Image (cartoon, rainbow, N blue to C red):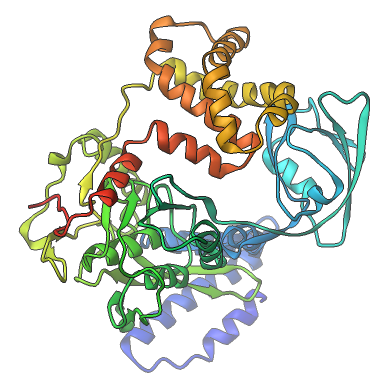
Length: 533
């Protein structure tokens, strides 16, 4: 809208109340400034840029989660939660300046033409992309595109002479939100949810039905560690799975919103058997809604560390040019009345996000005694009357401290420099055929790897890292050996099978939270534990 037209529209507004008069005066001031800049400024200006910057300035004075999204970024921002995008259907990593395919999405167009894990992508539509310092964004811009359009790929495949040409017809690519799902040997269903996306409940139910086809499991572990949230509706559907009819899942209230209550409908399919939820400091928003509801109704045991503390409700308001204003309109409360949101001061976003560092420095990640709350924030659970506290985030029932004893600068450098993932790609390229011939499934792979490869592959990794410039440090290698061996085995299992197998390795070998969850389910207590009694 031209500046003079905007001013004309504003002038037709008839303020009726003092608040409206103040808003009218502010709008008139902004519009007048825009007209003056267009009419008097020495150089040509972009009204779009001026308005975008102005709106950005508005929201930065508000809470930490309100945001302005320019029109050109809306699709990308919504993509992960909507659950799909249009493209070729591969996951990749850029290693030694060359794009290497890490995964071919099942049912996608790349799988249909025969692209494989480990293939090196050298050119796209005749444009060389190898050895030219291409970025992840650069790759995505070349590979993504509208459904039905074509992309030509030139690929180098390990073990195959010459280059291979593939013609891929872009299609809608499903994005799953499930990182892993499997049934343990102890008949416990493990489910790791990466985000609360539009299709998450369908994925959850499908995984449950496939893994538990023989009957209801003896317990369930819902892993929400690192889950930053997503759609509220998905969180409500998931919570409904575990609660009885009429039990409150959450309620919201705000200055312009009456309290609204969301309650379970009683049609959930897992309402009685043991449930453990794993959380950490990166579990936020929807993860906290589910965890808080289960804790308040004494339905689950929460294990891990205090969650992030994002309990503000955002509503999306579309603007005329396709941009969006994500505006905080209310606060979430758990059924007992706890506020999930970590305290903040409006306009001080840096300070708000620095709180995580403050929590680290205070020792909260390592010592439960560091968690102290005033009595004014004390609440009780609905059935067993366990003490729980508000004041930001969901505090677990069983605290598991962070363990950095195996983390050394050697390990950190290997991961940070991409050497570990690079070695896995190289090693799997050379041994994929051998492993497939000897291992029909994950269990046989695990037996073969543990008996034949565990130590030798680790030694190969250390030697490879040395050749890549990472100096050997025998003391640090010994300190990190067990953790690094587990991570290495898991990544190879992922390359051979799927992400689920990565977690099957890591959970069983080097995860105290998972071990505690299994222990709690196996010896399910009649009186649930509490960190504060």
